[in-house]
Length: 543
Image (spheres, rainbow, N blue to C red):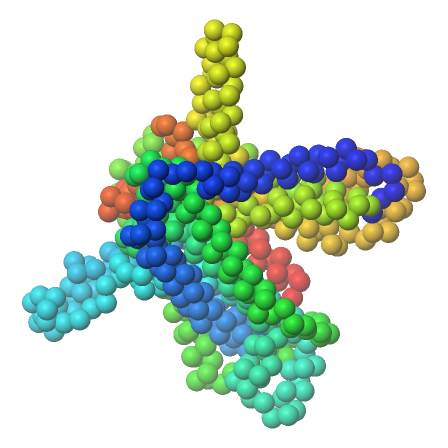
């Protein structure tokens, strides 16, 4: 804290937090309004199916992602085998691949007319579907597998870091007591890494609840698709808000259950640097198995879909490279750039207030602002549309009082609505990145600066900002790629005639013509690789 800290900074923090939490408040208020029995009709017919499918999908994706991520994380962190240095960063690459693109690629490969079933029919002489059994990928189970393949790096990254930071002395003690690699993993490493795995699973659960494109493509009804259909199909914003409130309840319950399950768990250990000799030296057969497992995971989750995208883009390059592609690419880049700069600026202000204010209550703005990340895209769209529409109508009514033509949908009908929505959704990422950098700045540096006569503003500009460079840069990168990939909010809130790369690709996926949008999908993937490479380099410097 800094003595003499101006209340103007605190007021600024609360104003920002109020603006960023406005969609959440709007959802709750809108959910309390009458909906002309639309919600009652949904409750009596399909709502139980929506809720059960959402819960089953969240749980199954979390379990599937954990089952494939945790073994890979432990092998990378605690074992030595050929290719480990490549796999430790390559297994992050699936995060750059949109889930609905992976879903399309595997559907194209695995459906009845796809190359795999055609090959099986040719090989075994089968003539019709009645002659053999082949699992249908367009099911709830298929959607779970697709999402697990894309989202497992959340758990892998946190689990790998936790395994690497575990004390080497404990590992040595386990070896002295006769524990082999498997016993050491099951009885020591896994319980100690449980908090990190739980946090990763909660992120996977939130991303699963927020997914719209994959479940829509697979025709799996969930709460996300229900919000979309209720809003655009039934035209009932109140019923859509009620469904959004249920989604928020589901997400927050999942987070609460995860924290309640480990409420009494405390972990104390001495962190030491992990050396080459601290890893298990796997024999030839085990090393081969570890390498094949990591390779199969990387191939199925990233390499195979990316290779097929490259094939599509090469064959349809003349069709894909057009003015629309260039225009929508520009739209994506400039929206993402604006949101990245805006969210990082907000994060710096909020974290500065949190660090320097002598009042404990000033911790609240940064925490309130971070709640937007838990809002799925379709839910966020409802929360954004309600207040901005009211604001637009109020402005036009004011113009009408003076017999003047109003500006129209100044906020809800322009790109402002996308910038606002993306800022609410992803400011938590920027706050987390800046917060991590702030933790490395000693409080004594603040005291020395104030002693030398620096005002809070000068302290931020001349001392904090130079020391926050890495955190600011990481926040810019991470927010930028999330904006490039965000689909549900862009799909529902985009102005008339406005497209970005995400909505552009999704339209081709919906029309079963991803070949024409493969080039745009590759751009999204390649942009997503940049922060992943930066993130891995940062982790390698720390471990």
